[in-house]
Length: 179
Ligand SMILES: Cc1cc2nc3c(=O)[nH]c(=O)nc-3n(C[C@H](O)[C@H](O)[C@H](O)COP(=O)(O)O)c2cc1C
Image 1 (tube, rainbow, N blue to C red):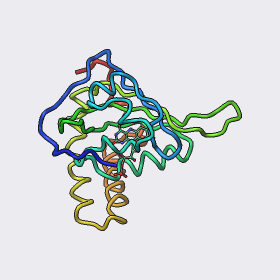
Image 2: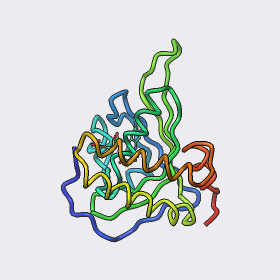
Image 3: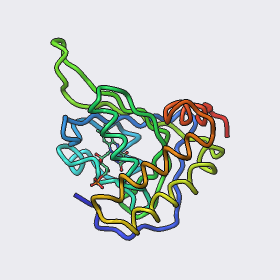
């Protein structure tokens, strides 16, 4: 499901104390959204619940980031990352996201839980050109091969920074309120 809107260059910003919270079922369909999420994306609860989370996917986001995210979650690990999201009026907002698998008392996977905060500009300045290159790699490859190739590029970038792995790099870029 996609928003039928043309993306604009208008940016909305999360406040330093704003937290966006959403929950999904195991297939990524939204089961809970907090007020701040509804306010920033401009959609009421009735347009969000049971809807796939890709409703707010921005076309500037490389597919490889989401492929990597799902691989991480399906391995039972938590994911950290930066994402550009689309609003109902075509504007966009950046977040620093943490997504974790959610389990019931019998340790059965019931879905996923995500909390997003304001990202530091310093992190976006580093990541925006990386995402741009990932997108360019994907556009030159087939839908099947594109995400794999762009993830390889991301892994190379991580290595070139000397970080241990993707999570170490992303967490080192996130400094709370460090604008
Ligand atoms: C808990 C949770 C939160 C998510 N949050 C976002 C989000 O904020 N923005 C987004 O584009 N995708 C988010 N996703 C990923 C989407 O489910 C989807 O994989 C992504 O938008 C790519 O969609 P596509 O494969 O249709 O291109 C989230 C997934 C989960 C499980």
